[in-house]
Image (tube, rainbow, N blue to C red; front, side, top):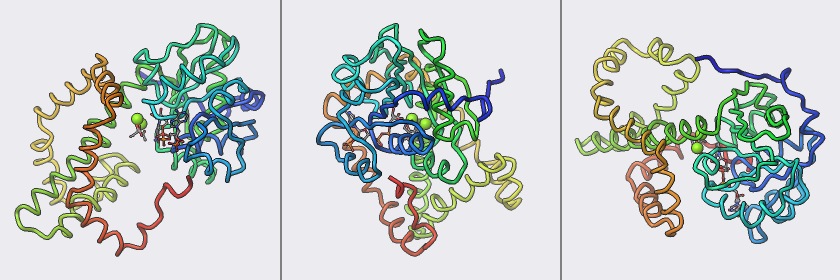
Length: 337
Ligand SMILES: NC(=O)C1=CN([C@@H]2O[C@H](COP(=O)(O)OP(=O)(O)OC[C@H]3O[C@@H](n4cnc5c(N)ncnc54)[C@H](OP(=O)(O)O)[C@@H]3O)[C@@H](O)[C@H]2O)C=CC1
Ligand SMILES: CC[C@](O)(C(C)=O)C(=O)O
Ligand SMILES: [Mg+2]
Ligand SMILES: [Mg+2]
């Protein structure tokens, strides 16, 4: 099945330049959207609670900061870029009372709409512009005259113009420079959750930690194990990123490629694939969403425990020491926030 991809020439920036946009939240995505919208000539206001630690960051950039309710009341387009777990309460308290027919409600990820946690009124456009990359990279690419590809979706379209408006928004943050792909809230949410759980974050972190443990438990130096299991992963993924798995295999030695082809399927075997299918099932059925919402409402006890265990893993201490020796690893992408 082929997808529809839209580029700068397909989007009319004027559609978003003519509206006032409230960006609610000024974290990874929020700062990138707000600054790039402003640089694209859009009238932007930021919505943040009174005690938010993000307020000074937005104000330092010369942005006008109001409370979420005040910003939502002023704006025609409200982009919610607060954490997914905060969105339901934020919507009920500050946004729903300030919606009116003809306004548009935008999201950077479909979680709250897909799982029915937010149910906007029928006379409001509901759309999504979801960059396929971390917010700091979204901003850096925009500043460099490039862009991070976006997914664009429409859930409700009473105006008949929701897709054009979303495409204009994607253009204003650099997304259509790279390409904006039309999708649905369901497809974006389920694939995004699956990708981050099974492959990009959960799968990759567990693979790296487990490889490091096997080597160090067998008596190899943690420093050598770090290079083999974490540091070089970026170099290998860069090759995949540039030219796919085939390009990576072209670049490595035949010995590595034979080991890859003969041993890789033993590591990621049918049991792992079955577990991935189970994880996808939990996402599709809403089981993961219910678990995560309950964990958040309970004060995140497991989240805090697992996060602390991850931070205490020996690979972190080894990494800290080694990264200090590598001057080229000293420009964190988060420095634009
Ligand atoms: N991180 C990423 O790169 C990606 C994120 N997304 C999606 O973008 C959205 C935002 O995520 P992300 O940028 O990671 O979030 P962050 O955690 O980086 O930032 C959240 C921001 O929202 C503020 N905030 C917290 N609570 C509230 C509230 N009740 N009302 C208003 N503002 C609030 C925070 O302020 P304070 O500083 O005070 O905590 C902070 O400025 C999510 O839907 C996420 O799934 C999509 C693609 C990639
Ligand atoms: C991969 C994690 C992500 O989905 C992202 C940066 O796209 C997220 O939710 O942060
Ligand atoms: Mg993602
Ligand atoms: Mg995500």
